[in-house]
Image (tube, rainbow, N blue to C red):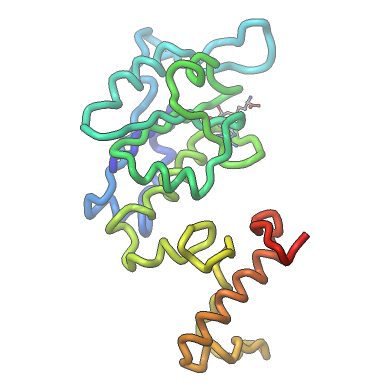
Length: 236
Ligand code: SAH
């Protein structure tokens, strides 16, 4: 899968895309990340990407022309489904379900806003989707784009070492039935500062362990994220 990131700060991604799972996925060719500098699609001497908002108000907005030029020349060069997404505090919320949907794409183009945001015609006529990573305001779309790339990439075949590891995780269907969060996990030592690992996990009884994990995942979800629990006849 090809991820395109359109940004005025391509060097921002030297950190997030150069480590661990994402770095390995790039090295093996499971994913390709292409960083595009928005200023390459400007036509004036100063490479201007922003302008003042009509009607007055604080700050600057990314202007439409370079964004349209860029997106129209970047996407559609490979066959298969593609999608153009504007990262925006005003978008619908990005979650694991959206990540799963995106994992079937051949190309995903992420537009990073800056300053006070982006001319609304980009959301209306250029992007297929306007996505937010949470109900808070970032200073730019770059961190949000890194979140989306990371989340989608680890769902792709060959990216995680263990094929089943993306299935049995928080928010992922096919995990611990009914629970949305992963179960609590422990590693050695079996006792640390007097806190013991649940006995059942040391028992070697796989059926018992499976049942404990399922129960523990449900309990933790109910305690920490009751909003995620599916309504059930046992609850009101
Ligand atoms: N004035 C805007 C915020 C602009 S912040 C508003 O109040 O809605 C500048 C840029 O950061 C945005 O264009 C967007 O690309 C990015 N951004 C900010 N918060 C974000 C969020 N929660 N999710 C995704 N992108 C975000």
